[in-house]
Length: 313
Image (cartoon, rainbow, N blue to C red; front, side, top):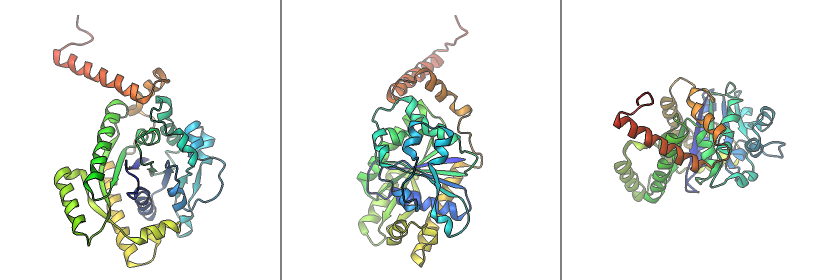
């Protein structure tokens, strides 16, 4: 099972639309797909047709990731009425806002990873829709992820915000979860008839190079129509829907190439460092832990340069 977070520091860039577009591409290709809705606005849950009152949600999972709670928080999407397959959603809740602390503890930051470990054999791909912030919920998603896709509009200010996100991701990867990588920055809501849009995209590619994904998602009304109707873009009628579906297919292909064929274990060798921190520094905040790890890494580097080791006197 691979896990991809779809993130943005700036609201209104179409982050949830991208997450649902990728989920639609994965579902159409027969991948067993789970969408985790961490955004308190719960738009991904609605877009997947999961409407109603639910006994457990992702908010309950983040409080107590027991096996029974995790499974009861996951429901099947109405997308399966179009054709058979697996497309589920871990139901979002406005109550997750209360858990979006700017200083989460290491124990809190680890809970989604623990929860996903309980369903790792049931899915091929997990897509996490994160809030438009860099607080506890987003970093909880990143700790549980293999890759993070950053969504931005074709404006310099939006991608500068995305640049800050990549620095935060690098810090988290070095200090806590080595498997985490930034997939890149996806330009969304591009207007092809806009001279300003063309200029900004070219400017961004010159500035950020291959950090900008080769695919660009155009502004299309069919995306909002499909999302509002609770249907996948791959099942929406019309030539425009077909064209945008093919774009998401190419983005998913890019994701799969980055992830490779091997599925990492949710709680395996790569996470021993995190499990140690979870035991030893249970009450510490994530920022405190990252400072400790950065300090220890710096000390290790100095010892290596000086030729010092544990066995030397």
